[in-house]
Image 1: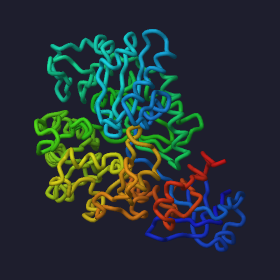
Image 2: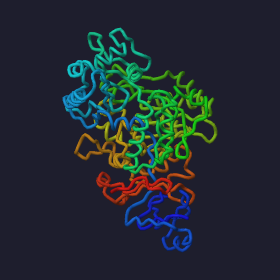
Image 3: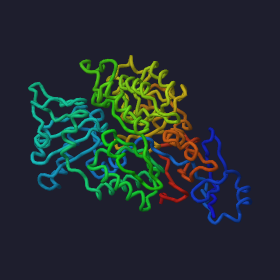
Image 4: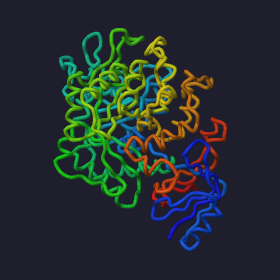
Length: 528
């Protein structure tokens, strides 16, 4: 027996503008789409449930192609600085948490961004010491490629004026060679290695909170990278297995960090029906916020640096070769153009098997020659449209206007025939896909009210932006045959809005409500 969905505008995404009157679903799969009258007559003996959309708009279920599900859940329960607008406000939040915490316990915060502070300054460890002398404090930047720590935390990590920079990282020091508390990329590990690890129960809680918010935002699934940050691999996988198999349906695709890939392959792993494993994750460089993205030219606002290579060219090639030994694809974090170039070279030297494709994540700073080279390789670009809203206008000063023509170039990538998927990188950005879609079609800054579009020639249509989170995400993980569209044989995963996102004014996307999130024909969220 099956369910008939009808009564609204049902966009199939098979091609732009195509919509149908009704969808008949059976055992979690779409049996047929078409006219309401035709499907009612054809399946009248099999329809035991109907759902009238009452004028709402249905699209294929949205999937975030790059997220950290547990990290996002943690952010929801920690100090969240994503809306702070001054250093004083940030420090006051730390002070309040200290006053309500046990003596000596860790104070951990997420999401600070000096570019949205009125004075655009990075706070110093001494400022934190004055309000938290006895608590180790760890504050993660919005990009998660930098942290600020106080003296207590640095002491526990044995970081002194004599501690050398680790490979792929920087311990920022003042003119007296004293650590300021600001640690970049691999230098973060000194602190992350000693910070208290969550228990499996805590991981499960974070994951549950995260998935439930995904439902509220219309997400039916996500490609997540969580397996090397929360204690043991078994504990983290145990959290995923428990949560995904106790009633929280969610299309979960997990990347495998290169540091745990050997352990992962030592024994068979299973996430249940709604989970699967994917490519080996590698970081090639850092981020633009901390000037650790690897560029082929000096930073415009800091000419003494071109960024940080997490791995040398030869090490990157060796890691990809290792993945091929496991018959794995790779998913490489590349933000700077030189990191992108190194990744392409390493993939050329170690190509994937026939039928496979690799994933290059972010790709914010590119060049025309790199795009031409990428077109010749079996890759997909995993882009984060919301970065436009968060990085402009400050990123122009950071990179230099003369290098901006192929930056955040989503339209060019699509026009050149490169497959793209859309994600948020939550907890770095909001997990709300409508914010990503809005950023892709308007290219406006979240710091301004001017309405100015940055490099408007790179704007996407709403249809192109939605494709990133549907067909793009499906293609990235080899599910183009059964996900990302509303058509016969595809999974009955739907996102249902209160208004037609393809017809409304773009600003109305920010006021659009998710009414239903449906996975396997089961309603996982309903707006009340």
